[in-house]
Image (cartoon, helix red, strand yellow):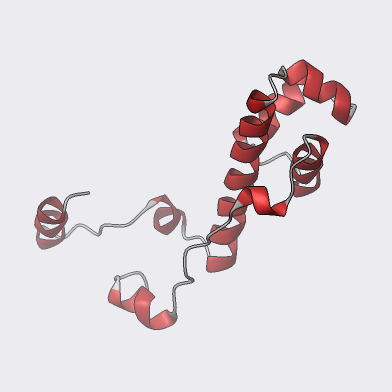
Length: 117
């Protein structure tokens, strides 16, 4: 959001934040969501780079095409174990994730952002 618009909204009494703020996620939950999304996107990227279909990846995982689709969406009902199995089945590893987690929010920064009183 542009700074000018954010300032105007805050002046009108609105609070600006992201979806994670709206949901009230803890820093640990934020990091898990970020990891899950990074894993799912990496699985899809590697599968497409190898010109594999979801059905072909499913065969490698001894799973179904619909489950691979859920892996690639980062669905909440897909375990981190299955996400990592998909990554490893494609020959990927931790370096492929290139994870750069956002810094955790301290109590002070949360208060400054108006998230805690």
